[in-house]
Length: 485
Ligand code: AMP
Ligand code: MG
Image (cartoon, rainbow, N blue to C red; front, top):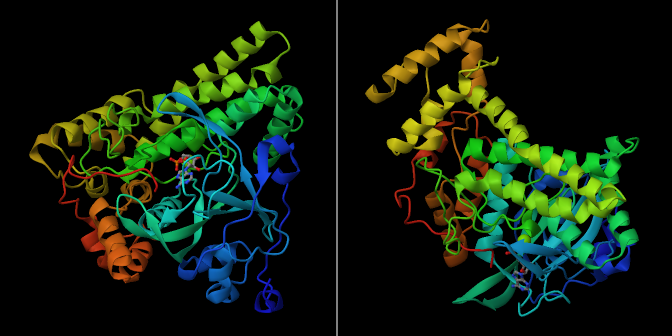
């Protein structure tokens, strides 16, 4: 370790509880040093939130650390093992190009995973090179931070470092490492892996760890594993409802990309809708539309069923009882999802209370949007009880106004609720591409930083954001995204 590094402590406070779990769940493994680490983006405000010294880290020390060339004191780097159903097919996986440095405790006592993504080969790399390229790492940084600003649970991004190495993809691209911060990296696929080891005590240890970490309130429960399953299901129902409400399409909801903490994880081929169409798919490899916008709730439920299967031996010693408990929990997903979704959609329409006709009112607006190829974000943002934006929407607008009049809250508070539930700016595909191109091709990080700035305040009517509100000229179908490479 360099003296420079040791002389300037940066506030790290590691306590690595996952590395104390049974060893079959991970492999001790250090990041592979890179040739010439350069810190190109650093999230000072997140660093400060974490209790780190942002000034110390924003420079060569950060480059060395976030490139994986130095290990911070107290870290215990590991690659985590996991499995996953990818497009429905089971595979053994694991961190093939990521290293968990450890768990940093913030001054408030939060426990956060610090992970380097793109940090070199591990025992789980299979045929891969263990590396990541600049464009996709910047993309994850931008979209995860945009999701956070929208108020959606997500992993965060602390830094992107370029490696000074070239990475061979379809073309040769600059290498990069992303530092990802997460409540944990425990996935549905982590439990799928643990189950395959056929060691009940190991499975129990993982379940206990997950419960203590993410659901500490359940420690007194007489049926802690069932209650944890139900709590995980509810968090996912809430999360997917939030995605739909901002037009987010994850793009690759494999079971290894679903975090039990309830955070959005793994920003590969994700993108936001422009025109509203529930069939929208941007991912180049999702030929069947498995992960289309409107399919996300069903896929979440399918993934959760895979999780429930892994927990069966912990739910009851009688397999029939265990199965019926698990089934009961999974069958609750649609109604939980519907409740979260309705609550969020009511807010988007300025509705504070509930009415049996609300679902139809919401559904009719969405059908109109689908039929008229309306822009999802801009339609919601420009809804105004005083002005009907389109002749064909007159009848709906009239019904909405009557419904608003039936609640006791003022028109002003309804508008305020709407403005805090429907963003004025999202990460539009063409704006993201433009910014990434400037960075990757021209080495100009200005546009990425401007984009991050705009997306950090998505519910205000900022004048400077005007150009970021225009729907993608690429149009639907023309835009394609790729799995994180
Ligand atoms: P993802 O599609 O990013 O969720 O990755 C799926 C699996 O492939 C994970 O186990 C990754 O660690 C692994 N993987 C992806 N890219 C690489 C790479 N370049 N080298 C090694 N493993 C990789
Ligand atoms: Mg993944």
